[in-house]
Length: 444
Image 1 (spheres, rainbow, N blue to C red):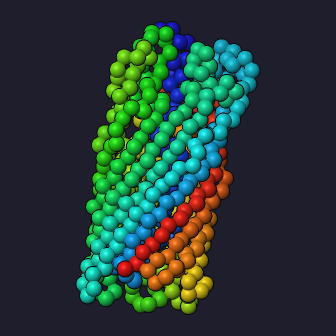
Image 2: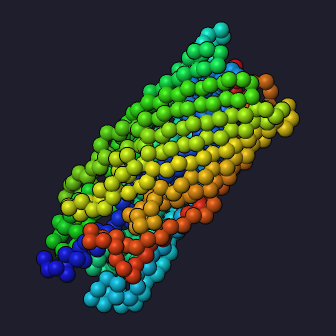
């Protein structure tokens, strides 16, 4: 193989990274981490660790805080997420050498992600005259749908070399569901502790799959990545623990630790360039999360809550490494660990109606110079606002709704190759999200 052909193959490997990872469209996530569950917790922008007001948020963010709920409760909810994602790219004339391309190419393609439904089920049982409280949560903690069509005008999704400069269409889908049986114990009248083993299930599909070595089975000198769409559900697990402290009726505090979710190896039945069977695989984990929260009830009918969260992407398999391995696969997405802060307020407008509002700010886990490696993982949003309300139908049943909006966010960076960035190129991700949530709660 000539030196020029090797250079072209390396550039192709880089271009195909646009479809590298299947966590493509986080549903208003802190990276891939969903910042809340259920209509009540979501309308508080996820603030719940030190201020439990519903079963779903308490179970998800602090297992000890279920002791602070007023009684037993079951919640059924669903949210509909509508991401709007645009991927743009540009190659200046001659940027690839040997006069390629002959003229500057620039284009934008919008992902046809559609609307994604995400369920929430939560149950908390408080036995009378017992220090114990028990719970069971079934939550969507991550969900994606990325579907970017190929385009002659957009270099990064144009046909692979030698017919184009990119990797073709990008498809990826991820659904992450978690089951969390939970127990909390009231140590004193002010302190409760809680623990929950977690079982996590992921359905991942990615095409192309750039975490595995590319192949050149047809011998044309242009290796390509195989698809990663033929697979089964993959299982993982971990645990979470927390403490809930109420020194007086006005203030409450909470802290929780969520371990990483350790998944089995993700394996896909794939094929090489001529159709021969091939297995591709990669190792991904869900990151460790630390949360601290406070609640304030010093004003009649008003609750104010705030959470500070740290998400450890830098220590998580699949996210912590970056760049190319010697075999042409990528080693990871190169994400940074991030802090986020959620602030929410609930006001009891009437005996039957409560209203809520919240705001979330999170750092962007994707460094600008890693934009190209994350074209299929656009977890960019930084500012989210939330609104919600609950109607108490009777003493036992209430209905809740919420709406969230993530404001426009954008990052840009050069195309990357094993030899480094390519001057005269750029890739851009632009995102915004809207989410509608509804649910019903039954207290008993």
